[in-house]
Length: 395
Ligand code: SAH
Ligand code: SF4
Image 1 (tube, rainbow, N blue to C red):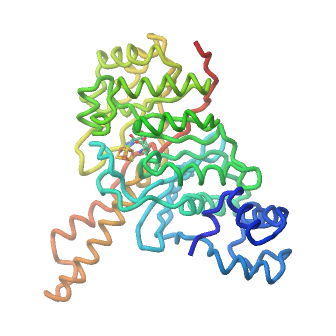
Image 2: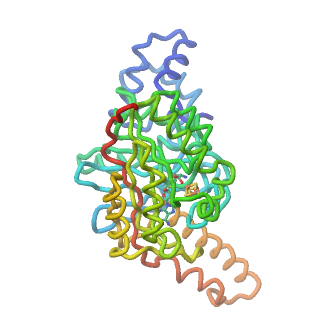
C-alpha cells in the first residue's frame, strides 16, 4: 500500500477529485499531516468517519522505523532508519547559526562507485520512494518539535545519486516545499549530483528555485575519471556545457563541491587548474574536508594545506568557502552509520551461524574485528547547504 507521504499536494488534489471530494478537504488533510504532524488517520478529527475510512483504504503512514539515533555534542544528530522491506538508510540533522538542516538519503546504496565514498561501497538496491524521503524529514522535524524548533534547510546529499532517482526526488521536494506541506523555502533546499548531465539539463528546464550543487572533486578529466567513474560517461566538457545551460536558463549561481584528498587533488597547481576551469562560470566552490572511510584509504588534507588551496582560489577570483565540520564525536558523513550497522548485522548473522556450529559465542576473530570498527571515532562534515545561492548575471 502507498504511504500518504508519497502524495504531493497536486497528486492529493487529483486523488480527492477522483473521489468527488472538495479541494478544501486536501487542505485539511495536509494540515493534519504537515502542520499537526499526526500519524494516524483517526487523529484527523475534523474529517468524517467515512473520509477517514477512504483514506485508510488507500494509504498507510510512515514507511520508516527509527533504528538508532546518535547525537553529537554540537547538536549534529544521525538517524538510522529501516524500510518496510528491511533496508537501512540514514539522515543527518545539523545545527547551523542560520537554522537546522537535514541531509536526506535518496537511494539504498549508490551505483556511481566514487572511489572515496562510503555510500558507493554498496551497490544501489533500489531508489527510495518519495514517501521514504519525506518520512526522513518528518522524523527529524518531530524530534525537533519536542524542543519547539523547526527544520529550515534540506540538502539531498545523503546516500544515493538524486538525479538517478529524479522523479521521486522532485516529488518529495515539492511536498516539503509546498506552503501547505512543511513550507521549507526553495532557496533553502539543495540537491547535489555527481554530474548526470542529461538530468542537469532537465532540471535546468524546470526553472526551479532550489539550489544545485555538483560534486566535482577534480580539476581535469584524467583525475576525475579515476575517482568518479561517472566522468567516463559525462566528461568535464559535457558537464560544463550543462552548467552553462543551467545558469543561462536560471540566472542562478551553482555550487561545486570539492573534497580535499591528501596527495590526490589538493596540490597548489591543482588549485590553479581548478580556478582556470571554473573562472568562466557563475559558481561557488565549497571545499569539503574529507571524512575518512576505513575501506578506501584516502586521507583528508590538513587544515593548513586546505587554507593554501583556498587562498589560491580566492586570489584567482573564485568564490570559495570551506565546509565547517560537524558532529566530530559521532559517526561521520552520510552513509557511514548505515555501513557500520550493516556490518554489525552481518556480524550478528555470522555470529549466530557460528554459535550454531561451534557453540563458542563471540570468539571468532574475524567477527571481533568488524565489531571493533563499529564506533570508531570519525570527524565529519556531513553536508551543508550552499548558502547563499545568489543570482548570476546572465552574460
Ligand atoms: N550522490 C550525490 C549526493 C550524495 S554525496 C553526489 O555525489 O553529489 C554528497 C556529497 O558528499 C558529495 O559531494 C560527495 O562527494 C561527498 N562525500 C562523499 N563521501 C564523502 C566523505 N567520506 N567525506 C566527505 N564528503 C563525502
Ligand atoms: Fe554515490 Fe555521491 Fe557517493 Fe558518488 S559521492 S558514490 S554519487 S553518493
